[in-house]
Length: 132
Image (cartoon, rainbow, N blue to C red; front, side):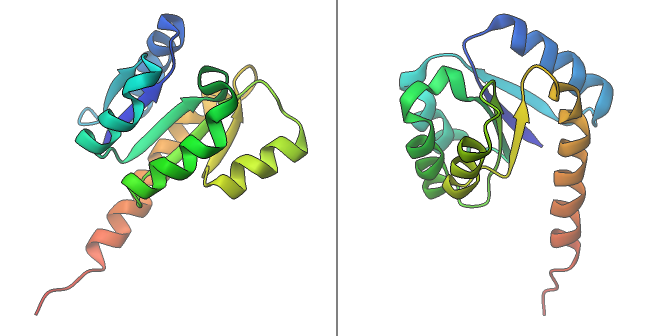
């Protein structure tokens, strides 16, 4: 499974890489994107299965960026990491197309579980397709 991380923090990348290596299969890999200007181009080029994005990194363009990411890759699953855990903001993230919203301080460790769930759902969809 191809996972892209949109965040400028090397610490976040290393922490996530460590979590992914413990909690998921060896064929899962993480591609860091730490330049805001390359987000859309890299998404178009790679069309990942999962995008993990730090809402702080995207600033005021978070909601619009999430909508555009779904336009580029309609089946991508988006995990939004946020420090702003207000119900109204979480609702906006959900409405924009974020599949999961996690408090970056308290829920980061749940990412491997979510990735496993996404992978299992993806495999179920693939095995249910039959060709004549």
